Length: 265
Image (tube, rainbow, N blue to C red):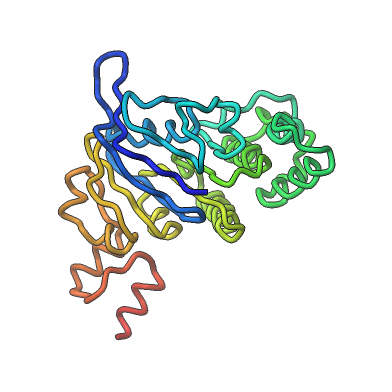
Protein backbone atom coordinates (compact mmCIF):
# COMPACT_ATOMS: atom_id res chain seq x y z
CA UNK A 1 0.00 0.00 0.00
CA UNK A 2 1.52 3.28 -1.12
CA UNK A 3 2.19 6.23 1.19
CA UNK A 4 2.15 9.61 -0.56
CA UNK A 5 3.21 12.77 1.26
CA UNK A 6 2.93 16.16 -0.42
CA UNK A 7 4.38 19.37 1.04
CA UNK A 8 3.71 18.28 4.62
CA UNK A 9 4.12 20.96 7.25
CA UNK A 10 3.47 20.64 10.97
CA UNK A 11 3.79 23.10 13.84
CA UNK A 12 3.34 22.24 17.52
CA UNK A 13 1.15 24.49 19.72
CA UNK A 14 4.33 26.07 21.10
CA UNK A 15 4.91 27.56 17.65
CA UNK A 16 7.81 25.25 16.80
CA UNK A 17 7.63 24.21 13.14
CA UNK A 18 8.94 20.64 13.04
CA UNK A 19 8.12 19.55 9.48
CA UNK A 20 8.89 22.04 6.74
CA UNK A 21 7.44 20.99 3.42
CA UNK A 22 8.22 17.27 3.21
CA UNK A 23 7.24 15.44 0.03
CA UNK A 24 7.98 11.76 -0.58
CA UNK A 25 6.47 8.47 -1.73
CA UNK A 26 6.89 5.07 -0.12
CA UNK A 27 5.81 2.21 -2.35
CA UNK A 28 4.09 -0.95 -1.14
CA UNK A 29 6.57 -3.49 0.20
CA UNK A 30 9.47 -1.08 0.71
CA UNK A 31 11.76 -1.28 3.74
CA UNK A 32 12.58 2.27 4.78
CA UNK A 33 14.72 3.59 7.64
CA UNK A 34 14.33 7.20 8.75
CA UNK A 35 17.40 8.61 10.49
CA UNK A 36 18.46 11.97 11.92
CA UNK A 37 19.36 13.67 15.16
CA UNK A 38 16.86 14.20 17.97
CA UNK A 39 14.46 16.94 16.96
CA UNK A 40 14.88 16.33 13.23
CA UNK A 41 11.17 15.45 12.91
CA UNK A 42 11.33 11.67 12.53
CA UNK A 43 8.64 10.69 15.04
CA UNK A 44 6.50 13.69 14.11
CA UNK A 45 6.61 12.54 10.49
CA UNK A 46 5.57 8.92 11.04
CA UNK A 47 2.83 9.85 13.50
CA UNK A 48 1.12 11.50 10.55
CA UNK A 49 0.89 8.08 8.86
CA UNK A 50 -1.61 6.69 11.37
CA UNK A 51 -3.40 9.96 12.06
CA UNK A 52 -1.99 10.59 15.54
CA UNK A 53 -0.95 13.97 14.15
CA UNK A 54 -2.64 15.99 11.43
CA UNK A 55 -0.89 18.21 8.86
CA UNK A 56 -0.90 21.96 9.37
CA UNK A 57 -0.77 22.03 5.58
CA UNK A 58 -0.09 19.55 2.81
CA UNK A 59 -1.42 16.02 2.71
CA UNK A 60 -0.69 12.43 3.72
CA UNK A 61 -2.35 9.63 1.75
CA UNK A 62 -2.37 6.01 2.93
CA UNK A 63 -3.45 4.21 -0.19
CA UNK A 64 -6.59 6.06 -1.23
CA UNK A 65 -7.28 7.38 2.29
CA UNK A 66 -6.53 11.00 3.16
CA UNK A 67 -5.45 11.04 6.83
CA UNK A 68 -7.22 14.37 7.34
CA UNK A 69 -10.52 12.70 6.50
CA UNK A 70 -9.89 9.31 8.12
CA UNK A 71 -10.16 8.44 11.82
CA UNK A 72 -7.25 7.00 13.79
CA UNK A 73 -9.37 3.90 14.45
CA UNK A 74 -9.90 3.33 10.73
CA UNK A 75 -6.24 4.00 9.88
CA UNK A 76 -5.29 1.31 12.42
CA UNK A 77 -6.43 -1.29 9.89
CA UNK A 78 -3.70 -0.10 7.49
CA UNK A 79 -0.91 1.20 9.71
CA UNK A 80 0.49 -0.67 12.72
CA UNK A 81 2.74 1.31 15.07
CA UNK A 82 5.18 -0.24 17.55
CA UNK A 83 6.14 2.41 20.10
CA UNK A 84 9.71 2.84 21.31
CA UNK A 85 8.66 2.10 24.89
CA UNK A 86 6.46 -1.03 25.03
CA UNK A 87 5.05 0.07 28.37
CA UNK A 88 3.16 2.81 26.50
CA UNK A 89 1.02 0.26 24.66
CA UNK A 90 0.68 -2.80 26.90
CA UNK A 91 -2.32 -3.01 29.23
CA UNK A 92 -3.77 -6.54 29.28
CA UNK A 93 -3.57 -9.15 32.03
CA UNK A 94 -1.67 -11.70 29.96
CA UNK A 95 0.24 -11.98 26.70
CA UNK A 96 -2.46 -13.84 24.79
CA UNK A 97 -5.14 -11.27 25.66
CA UNK A 98 -2.80 -8.44 24.72
CA UNK A 99 -2.09 -9.88 21.29
CA UNK A 100 -5.74 -10.71 20.60
CA UNK A 101 -6.91 -7.17 21.37
CA UNK A 102 -5.81 -5.57 18.07
CA UNK A 103 -7.29 -8.03 15.58
CA UNK A 104 -10.47 -8.37 17.68
CA UNK A 105 -10.84 -4.58 17.68
CA UNK A 106 -10.56 -4.62 13.88
CA UNK A 107 -13.56 -6.95 13.72
CA UNK A 108 -11.88 -10.07 12.36
CA UNK A 109 -13.59 -13.45 12.73
CA UNK A 110 -12.60 -15.72 15.61
CA UNK A 111 -10.94 -18.11 13.18
CA UNK A 112 -8.83 -15.37 11.63
CA UNK A 113 -7.93 -13.94 15.05
CA UNK A 114 -6.78 -17.38 16.21
CA UNK A 115 -4.66 -17.75 13.08
CA UNK A 116 -3.11 -14.29 13.36
CA UNK A 117 -2.36 -14.64 17.08
CA UNK A 118 -0.74 -18.05 16.61
CA UNK A 119 1.43 -16.67 13.81
CA UNK A 120 2.43 -13.57 15.82
CA UNK A 121 3.33 -15.68 18.86
CA UNK A 122 5.48 -18.01 16.79
CA UNK A 123 7.24 -15.21 14.93
CA UNK A 124 8.17 -13.41 18.15
CA UNK A 125 8.99 -16.63 20.09
CA UNK A 126 6.28 -15.96 22.68
CA UNK A 127 4.28 -19.17 22.31
CA UNK A 128 5.35 -20.39 25.77
CA UNK A 129 4.46 -17.11 27.48
CA UNK A 130 0.77 -16.70 26.59
CA UNK A 131 -0.50 -16.83 30.18
CA UNK A 132 2.13 -14.48 31.60
CA UNK A 133 1.36 -10.90 32.56
CA UNK A 134 3.47 -8.72 30.22
CA UNK A 135 4.79 -6.76 33.21
CA UNK A 136 6.17 -9.95 34.73
CA UNK A 137 8.44 -10.24 31.68
CA UNK A 138 11.79 -8.55 31.17
CA UNK A 139 11.87 -5.33 29.11
CA UNK A 140 13.32 -7.37 26.25
CA UNK A 141 10.33 -9.71 26.16
CA UNK A 142 7.85 -6.87 26.70
CA UNK A 143 9.25 -5.41 23.49
CA UNK A 144 8.41 -8.65 21.71
CA UNK A 145 4.87 -8.59 23.12
CA UNK A 146 4.43 -5.08 21.72
CA UNK A 147 5.71 -6.28 18.33
CA UNK A 148 3.41 -9.31 18.39
CA UNK A 149 0.36 -7.20 19.26
CA UNK A 150 0.92 -5.11 16.13
CA UNK A 151 1.90 -8.02 13.88
CA UNK A 152 -1.37 -9.78 14.80
CA UNK A 153 -3.33 -6.86 13.33
CA UNK A 154 -2.01 -7.88 9.90
CA UNK A 155 -1.69 -4.30 8.64
CA UNK A 156 -0.05 -3.71 5.24
CA UNK A 157 2.19 -1.04 6.82
CA UNK A 158 4.19 -1.56 10.02
CA UNK A 159 6.16 1.20 11.76
CA UNK A 160 8.89 0.50 14.33
CA UNK A 161 9.95 3.42 16.52
CA UNK A 162 13.56 2.84 17.70
CA UNK A 163 13.13 -0.96 17.79
CA UNK A 164 16.63 -1.78 19.09
CA UNK A 165 16.81 0.71 21.97
CA UNK A 166 17.65 -1.14 25.19
CA UNK A 167 17.75 -4.53 23.45
CA UNK A 168 20.50 -7.11 23.70
CA UNK A 169 22.12 -8.73 20.66
CA UNK A 170 19.85 -11.78 20.80
CA UNK A 171 16.69 -9.69 20.74
CA UNK A 172 18.04 -7.40 18.03
CA UNK A 173 18.45 -10.55 15.92
CA UNK A 174 14.84 -11.55 16.73
CA UNK A 175 13.60 -8.14 15.64
CA UNK A 176 15.64 -8.35 12.42
CA UNK A 177 14.04 -11.74 11.73
CA UNK A 178 10.56 -10.27 12.25
CA UNK A 179 11.32 -7.45 9.82
CA UNK A 180 12.64 -9.88 7.22
CA UNK A 181 9.52 -12.01 7.52
CA UNK A 182 7.21 -9.00 7.19
CA UNK A 183 9.13 -7.98 4.08
CA UNK A 184 8.82 -11.49 2.67
CA UNK A 185 5.05 -11.18 3.12
CA UNK A 186 5.07 -7.99 1.06
CA UNK A 187 4.39 -5.56 3.91
CA UNK A 188 5.79 -2.04 4.01
CA UNK A 189 8.18 -1.73 6.96
CA UNK A 190 9.31 1.67 8.22
CA UNK A 191 11.64 2.29 11.14
CA UNK A 192 12.88 5.32 13.00
CA UNK A 193 16.32 4.52 14.33
CA UNK A 194 19.58 5.86 15.70
CA UNK A 195 21.09 2.39 15.30
CA UNK A 196 22.82 2.95 11.98
CA UNK A 197 24.34 -0.54 11.85
CA UNK A 198 20.88 -2.10 12.29
CA UNK A 199 19.61 0.27 9.60
CA UNK A 200 22.37 -0.78 7.19
CA UNK A 201 21.79 -4.48 7.79
CA UNK A 202 18.01 -4.51 7.44
CA UNK A 203 16.76 -1.65 5.27
CA UNK A 204 17.15 -0.97 1.56
CA UNK A 205 16.15 2.70 1.58
CA UNK A 206 17.28 5.42 3.97
CA UNK A 207 15.74 8.85 4.49
CA UNK A 208 17.86 11.31 6.48
CA UNK A 209 15.99 14.22 8.07
CA UNK A 210 17.50 17.45 9.31
CA UNK A 211 15.57 20.36 10.81
CA UNK A 212 12.26 19.09 9.46
CA UNK A 213 13.42 18.62 5.89
CA UNK A 214 14.73 15.72 3.81
CA UNK A 215 18.51 15.88 3.63
CA UNK A 216 19.03 12.60 1.77
CA UNK A 217 16.72 9.94 0.36
CA UNK A 218 17.78 6.92 -1.64
CA UNK A 219 19.21 3.40 -1.59
CA UNK A 220 20.93 2.64 1.71
CA UNK A 221 24.32 2.12 0.08
CA UNK A 222 24.21 5.55 -1.57
CA UNK A 223 22.89 7.47 1.43
CA UNK A 224 25.16 5.85 4.01
CA UNK A 225 28.19 6.55 1.85
CA UNK A 226 27.68 10.31 2.03
CA UNK A 227 29.51 10.88 5.29
CA UNK A 228 29.93 14.63 5.04
CA UNK A 229 26.26 15.28 4.30
CA UNK A 230 25.08 12.88 7.01
CA UNK A 231 27.27 14.76 9.49
CA UNK A 232 24.89 17.70 9.13
CA UNK A 233 22.30 15.69 11.02
CA UNK A 234 24.87 14.11 13.37
CA UNK A 235 24.58 10.66 11.82
CA UNK A 236 27.73 8.60 11.32
CA UNK A 237 27.78 5.88 8.63
CA UNK A 238 28.19 2.28 9.88
CA UNK A 239 31.64 1.36 11.15
CA UNK A 240 32.37 -0.93 8.21
CA UNK A 241 31.24 1.76 5.77
CA UNK A 242 33.71 4.20 7.31
CA UNK A 243 36.46 1.60 7.38
CA UNK A 244 35.87 0.79 3.72
CA UNK A 245 36.20 4.47 2.85
CA UNK A 246 39.45 4.74 4.78
CA UNK A 247 40.81 1.69 3.00
CA UNK A 248 39.92 3.19 -0.36
CA UNK A 249 37.36 0.59 -1.39
CA UNK A 250 35.75 1.54 -4.68
CA UNK A 251 32.21 0.77 -3.52
CA UNK A 252 30.30 1.69 -0.39
CA UNK A 253 29.86 -1.31 1.91
CA UNK A 254 27.14 -1.62 4.56
CA UNK A 255 27.84 -4.89 6.33
CA UNK A 256 30.34 -7.67 6.85
CA UNK A 257 29.41 -9.65 3.75
CA UNK A 258 29.72 -6.61 1.49
CA UNK A 259 32.99 -5.62 3.15
CA UNK A 260 34.57 -9.05 2.65
CA UNK A 261 33.31 -9.22 -0.93
CA UNK A 262 34.80 -5.81 -1.72
CA UNK A 263 38.12 -6.77 -0.14
CA UNK A 264 38.41 -9.82 -2.44
CA UNK A 265 38.05 -7.73 -5.58
